[in-house]
Length: 309
Image (cartoon, rainbow, N blue to C red):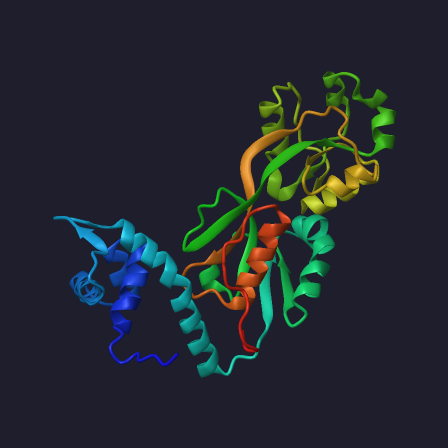
């Protein structure tokens, strides 16, 4: 089908896409580097072209109409595709690596056992893992996506929940046997409590949520939860384990839950990506795959493109 794009108002379309994403003319004006009046004028031009009302304007604010909300959703990914293709053409981008930030523990216990499936489905993409525990700011990195623990409220970031954080006391079967299998809750106070440097309050949180009185004193400490779990497997003490990450260790009998009091901490694991740039097709593919691994519906409808995606 032959199509003429001569009269298509591309600049107003872009202004509307950004305004509909942020739901305010102010944020759109800031991103575009123009005034709010200019944004409003661009959207009025688009409304005249389409013959529909996209925003309801009040004396101090504007809000999307139902038609505007649906239209904004439809064109958002299409405009992202155009921006991505343009950036790749201008920079002659051939890079097919997805740069992922996540915690060492999450990488070791949850992602790595699954990652072979992604490479089987997408053999033309490479994965580069950056395993650190420091807070993430996408603006100061070249990362495409992150797997984070928190509440999904990171700045300039869109996040989708993977699964809630559920924790419980874990130890090796041998360590439990040495302590009469912790037949009473009070016997926890006689054991060595293992701690992770970045999760110093985890014993306190578990005890409060499980309604258990325990002397959560400082015990043997490690840099990461990964080392804490390794120490627990080596009969060195009790650890607070993230149960979804340790499912394989528990199923294989390397670790047990001696008191069986799992609790939700209120936090969750999320997949996150920056809203300050378009989402490349390679990143969309990884995000959709990660969501599927956690039993969540996909975020993007388009995850395939040409060889430079």
